[in-house]
Length: 346
Image (cartoon, rainbow, N blue to C red; front, side):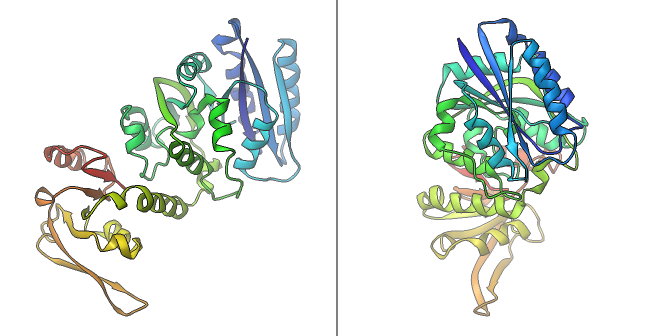
């Protein structure tokens, strides 16, 4: 008998518990040869979370489904809550579920099939966003990534190409990485785990069906994550694994984002930058001088060229889906290969 453990970190989740757990109770796989257990980690909630979870524990017990309740009296953070729930679970497969999200009835069935085919993969899925128009660019990006792009577009502001609330995997995936980072509020524990998984040779699979309703609200844990920390983690990995393979490169974006990146590069890799490229006619043909405030001198001086004259490889610091398709058309016109000729760092 295959056992799937549903891992749920909860902090002050009274508003979401009923919808979330009802969606688990409605899973189509409950009538099959697969058993599920639910492990909820109460991360120091001060609302009615504990009482509601105990009510659902009785509900599931009547249906011969185990809901294991664990937790801490004070908040330890999302990473610690996930680790705590996993440590209390016994399933061969792990299904990560945020308390403010809702599963499609076929989520576990379809993701389990994908995970059974590859025990070395994190399995994600497409999403529906509620409210529908809250983050349209994120939804379009996440739902339209190709299989190849799952491993290529890993340096964007969106974080992991498989959104954390959709993760499903064989237990060995978690055990190989070891655990989620427990630094607490503000730390992108999902991105750190995601990179570790890839660095250990892990695979990525996406079920191209909308199997999760991903809820947007101001209290979501994702809003506590510091964008600056994500950027620094991505930059560190880029300089460790990508830039050492490039003898020279051009940065697409002579504006604020491109200049910031050059200033942040270590000395070894900043010397490899040969130019900025751009589409802004006011910038093309000029020279950008970046100053070092500590030495009070020019750090680097770079020409700005038309994007069409740029030679690969390119490090692209332009956000996707922001120019009504113009940037994407320009990039496509160059007939470059993503991952080989260019990397998106935005």
